[in-house]
Length: 154
Image (cartoon, rainbow, N blue to C red):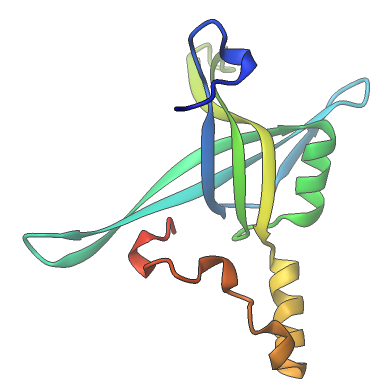
């Protein structure tokens, strides 16, 4: 049985969970009054074998993520292109008028929770420490132990 969060008492649910790598650094936009948003793209990959050619195929899906206020500032400070992150949020579609008068559409993930899985700064520090004291970093890849390599989402 699945427990339904209180916010879904109307019978619907809009929830997204993603693990992927940043396609670029977090881009910040500040507003009057001190609020801000951060935007970045997240890449998720699906890897499969083409049965007719036996070729390994990687398909990448790009997701537009939006984080707000303090969360945006934290992401900007610690994340950069290539970093791996887990996010939860909801799908939000919006439209706007471009300068040329055309109507533009986009679909975004409004991030409500996130966990940094790796950051470039962390990876550089761990590699430096690993060279100096390899025994202390023996579990560097421990979170993925026991997972078949083809089941990893990147």
